[in-house]
Length: 508
Image (cartoon, rainbow, N blue to C red):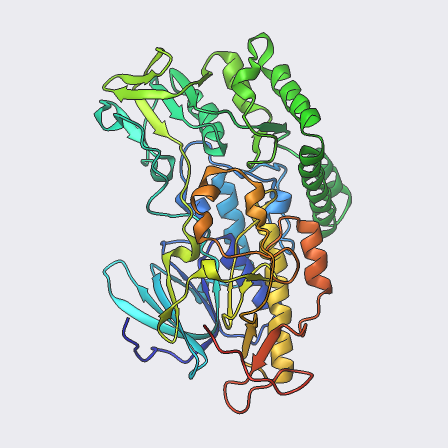
């Protein structure tokens, strides 16, 4: 891409994405670094990210709202598991409360970003819906663009699907005002999307079948948090929220650790939850995956609505491999046949790191798979850059809060010492042992994208962790000037704050 003169003076930070990650970073900047000039660029026409994109029936949070909400913005509703519209409303309130609207540029897709070692700035190129290109310059670049492909979901290669005479829908592209009243629907898949869709569709459809090749683990919890509601009646909103959030974090952590330490006991507990709700028709074979609990993300079923739909006879679960699809429905390898008017392919997402942005340094492409994570958000030998990848065993927002807090500490430290550039320096002969926490999860979307994901070492700071409580303790305790970060001034001699003069590292 040809360089061009940016249209405005450099920003202190450019945030890509106006979803949970970008909004959280921006709101934290407003509070903790109020002198910083920043902008958010968002490809869509409104804020919300995933929660604006996904509009399929029943769309809801996959974590409780006391952890999916930000630590600085209490979730004030009774429901712990919220629908998509309620989550969008919450994000809109955060935007309004922190006066973020003037900072957001909608309809701008970031296509490339280049760090200049001479200018010590990021130049970021964007395109609008008509293909018109513009650019911005920023000292720091933060990517909050999520982790999956907004345009091209995973294609499960279902044989004969193109011959189906009915309606085929992927949940990521649900048609507006689609009327499925009285229809026979097959939902292919067993993950969180399928488990959300089935009870919602069953309210109006003639019959909904969840067709799964392999089952998933499900955990049931009340849609409303009784303790949270009680605390809100007794205590100030922020105090009640903090206590409920603490309880939810601890409960998530306990369930995850128990799943890893005593998987057979956890299996029995999860089966008992389902059997109690389905009754005599409960078949363990339909609810026993070929992996232990939390080797893939566990699906949250509020108030057991999926199992209530099955018990009512409006929905059922079929386990089997697809032989092929024809005009009238699906044929299974064991000879069974499922007729349908609608097929929903809830077959998974495709990871796309960095929002498909072409990242470079002085025009040389950056391969993120060659870099090590630093402090869960920055990357080895890449200046003034951070990107967000959330937790797999807990709420995405927990990482957002933790990282945004730490980045603001970093920026204040740099201001104190008059520094403009910060680089996590990793020498070529580092000798780090790799141990990627993603490898402990068997989810297909992670396995398919393993070659794209940055490296993680066995120890801090060169790692991305999946233990929120341990990660938060580490991030708050670790000094900013830890001997790893190299600092420099944009003008004048480079320096490492607080100690000796050190040149910035050469970039590979």
